[in-house]
Length: 348
Ligand code: UDP
Figure 1 (tube, rainbow, N blue to C red):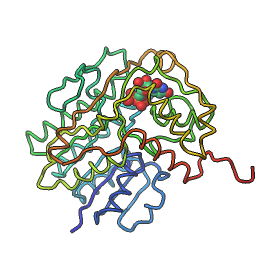
Figure 2 (cartoon, rainbow, N blue to C red):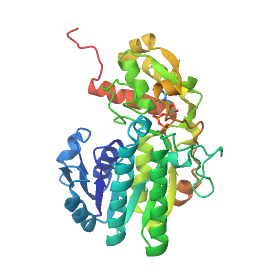
Figure 3 (spheres, rainbow, N blue to C red):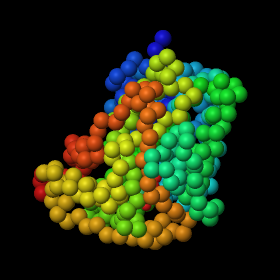
Figure 4 (tube, rainbow, N blue to C red):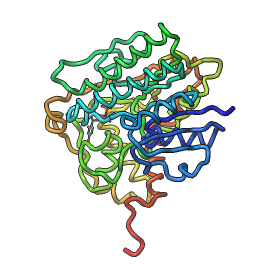
C-alpha cells in the first residue's frame, strides 16, 4: 500500500513545495487542508492529491478523521514571520501552539508518525558559533520582547513531543528550518513592509522600486537554504528508511550560505543584474538603513548569528545541501521571469 501523508497547511511555502515533490517523485497519496489554494496550481489536478479548503481549527472532525486514516502527519499550519510575533503575539500562540498541540495529542492518541516543524529560532540568542540539536542552549530575551513568543511556543511543543516519545513511544521527527528561501516563500506582489520574511521583502522592494531597508545596518547573519534542498531532506524524513528519522531532531540548513543581511541585499541586487529581463531594476535599486525599533517597534529583539550544525542530517539521512546562495537567488528570479512577473508588457 502506498504511504498516506496528511499535510495540514498544504498551500504554504513548505507544504506546496512538498506536495509537488511527493507527486513528482513518489507513489504516495497526500491528503491536504489549507485556508487557500493559490500556491498549489497544477498539482490540484493530481488524482493522488485530495485537497480540502478549510481552517484546521474549525474542521476538527475532518482533521481527526484524516489523522486516523493516514500513516504520516505533517502539520505545517503556523505563523512564521517575525513582524507578526511582535504585532499579534496571541494569535501566534493560539495557532502555532494551541492548535498544533491538539494535533500532537491526536497523533499520540492514534499512534501516528508525526513530522513537525520546530524552528531554527528555538536556539534564540544562543552564543554558540554553530547550533547543535543536542548541546546548544535555547536562549531568549525578557518577556516584554514579544518576539520570543514564537520560539517559546515551538520550544514547548518540541518538549511535549519529546516527552510523548519517552513515555508512550510517539514516533516523531522534529525538523528545524534555517531560513529556507525560494519561490512562493511569501507574496512577491505584496510590497508592504513586514508582510514578508527578509528574502521576499528584499526581492519585492526591488520589483516595486522601493529601497531595501537593512535593519540596524544589516550586520546580523542567517544561513539561507534553498527550498529544493530542504524538500529533498523532508522526503528522506518521511520515507524514514529503517527508522533512521524516528525520534530525531534535525537542523535543516546550509552552513555554507552564512551571510549578513547586508550581503544578502547586495547579492539580490546582483542577481537582478545577471538576468536580462530584470537588469534595469538593479540600476535603480537602493539600499538604506533603518533602526530595529522603527521597523519592528519596541517588542522586537534580533538574532545576530544562526549557523546550523548538520552532522545529524548528514549521518542519519545522508543529506547535505547542494544549492549555493547565489544559485538560490537566481533560481527564484528565473521562476518569476517564467511567470512573467513584473515584466514590461510587450505592447509597451
Ligand atoms: N530584515 C531586514 N530588513 C527587512 C526585513 C528583515 O533587515 O526588510 C532583517 C531582520 O531584522 C532579521 C533578518 O532580516 O535580522 C531576517 O528576517 P526574517 O524576517 O527573514 O526572519 P528571521 O530570520 O529573523 O526569523
